[in-house]
Image (cartoon, rainbow over all chains, first blue to last red; front, side, top):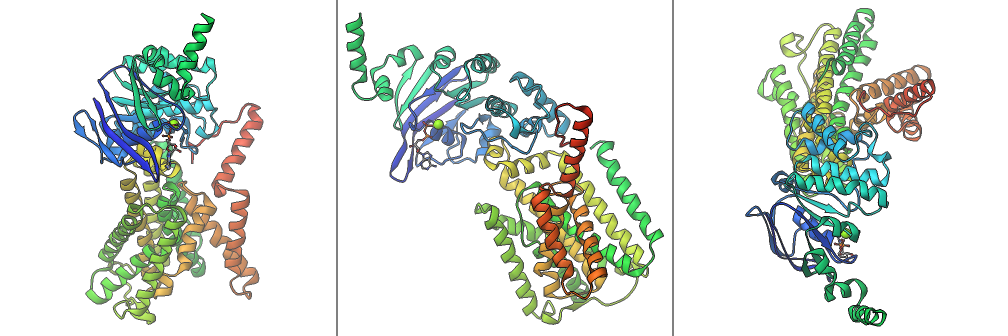
Length: 248
Length: 332
Ligand SMILES: Nc1ncnc2c1ncn2[C@@H]1O[C@H](COP(=O)(O)OP(=O)(O)O)[C@@H](O)[C@H]1O
Ligand SMILES: [Mg+2]
């Protein structure tokens, strides 16, 4: 359903994303991992239309959307969350989510009903009338998820929705993400919490210094020499192997 | 919209409509009409600035357009005053859309947008002051011909009711905005434009609609001004005094609220009049009062008078309930 084809983004002298290619079939949860500064968020911004690629093409359900505005892509069914949460601080939780729900429900009553339903699903049911600015970190992350979900996306891009949460909060939200998948929404998620990646993702892409260096099931990818070195530095894989042999 | 949304507007309008039955003095009625005209223009500002978060320093551009369009249509083309009113309002919408198109499409926001609107108003003022078509520096005098068909009335109270009807209509319009998808999207753009876009909001379209509506309402107020005083010149119609008034009233009353502009206009002009009564010999005393009220509002009442009242009410409730305070946004 999504085809990212040789997409690049240059910021001045820095190649933040360097001809990255990625392809998603409908259904399932796909991970996008990589060290900090690898270009993951930049790639999301290009898929959702906030940053124009310097090179390459993006297709969604067969249509070239490379030059489309973000709101058009949202209409097509691409939803996203922001790594740095962006609540409408002056509005209540319910009003925040309703903005997303209005995309497919023009009537206030319908949009509000949809917002309430989504809020309950992500565990914000008891916070509906609170100002969004007063939520905890975990609450804000849930709100990001809820708003994107309220647009009824076909493809959901989650940018580190688990970051900053404690283990019990992560345990609470993982079933929610699975539930979204089970309803047929395709999920592409950037995640650093490896336990969650192993737990949720059928397949992961690994981005390092802007390049897509590996792709496959999480267990296989995590054993990949290039991936280990991307995270731990050059020669790390060999060192680990040597240490493993010494201990074994 | 529910009955609860409409009742406060209805009650306030009826009470205000009864006023001329009690008050018959001309200066007081003059004051009330002028205050309502400012309130109407400020309601226009509030649609864009309050709900949309796009602060304009140049709403005189719309006020003046409304005033000049109706005056020129009547004087030069013999157009009926009521038709002039409709066309003046439409012209305000078109000018608003055009200024919005030029500035929003190039991504102007915040202080840059404010400065661009100010620049437009100043350019219009200078042009209107220079061109003979607009009467130049001498201004334009609408011919005195007191007939309802000419939008001129014997009785000041009738004009008061007319302006009040428009203010009430815009109160309803604003309430509708507050309860509609358009309003939700407009407020979303104000709060966080990127987040709004990600949720499918066409932020350019939403802002253009808001500035067109805003321009139309403010132009209507300018048209009513011209029609009431029957004289305009560039410094009145496009002067920065009106830009300042139109943004002060909502800020004092409560920015982005339905009643804020009316409450603010009433407070500012009420205090200004009182100050003139007591210290009328000091020139510009009302402006000094405006400045003082603004300082107080910015320092102590960020949500304006209505925001302050809401906080006091919440605090009162909190003390009575001795429970956690719930901030309500519903009633504003
Ligand atoms: N708007 C921008 N302007 C300039 N450089 C940027 C911008 N956004 C990101 N970068 C740079 O691009 C690189 C990739 O950033 P990012 O996509 O946020 O990485 P990740 O999400 O994988 O941590 C980083 O070096 C970052 O500093
Ligand atoms: Mg990132």
